[in-house]
Length: 258
Image 1 (cartoon, rainbow, N blue to C red):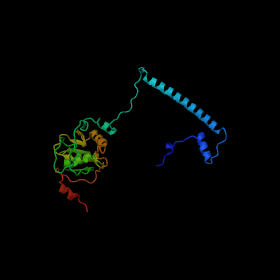
Image 2 (image 1 turned 90 degrees about the vertical axis):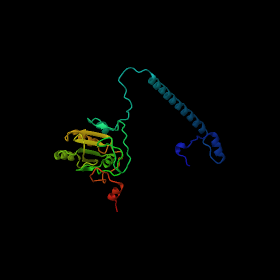
Image 3 (image 1 turned 60 degrees about the vertical axis):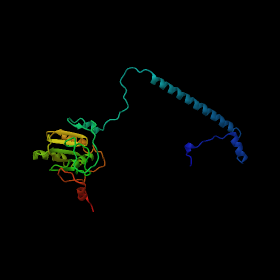
Image 4 (image 1 turned 135 degrees about the horizontal axis):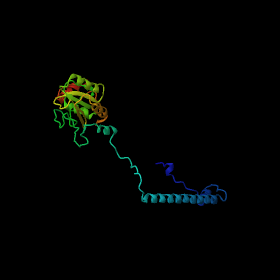
């Protein structure tokens, strides 16, 4: 293996080396050259030693200053500590938001077929169907399966659930908040105690006014940002309504290609 220039050793010629080379036909340098070079080397060593001494004195003074007692004064800024992402810090300031991630709630990412039960209503995460609900700004006019919706949350989607008997005019207001926005979808939800419930993976906000500005804040801050699979898409997926999730056989038949 070849050596780099940094690894090479540079050897200054000695008188003996000149003699050896002369023996093999090398012509010795003029008289006095060796002495002149030796004197030069001595001067360089002395200069280097002086520089090193000055540096050592400077370092010692610095260490003494650091060790000396400090007088009272303005606090010295500490090295920046790790902080939460800006979107998360702002989301946590939304009045009424529940951050299940911060509370240590365990939300499994396992995939499983068939109906599932959840601790929250609507759910904010947990086991879910291998098939997600399409979340490209979709507005579903009938309830959807939570098992598909939770998979969409895993992809980073915001699920806007609204009370099933909500007047059409108020539903239209909500549709305008979702329409055309990727990583969002909405659908009626039976048994909802408030007019609107917003879900992202590990977050929930329930409000009783469709014009509440917190709805827009939740969507803008949490859509896509809460993804546990940053590159996961909201396209494709299930677009059917109904609260019973697809079986494996149904999914194979529905999404079979070729």
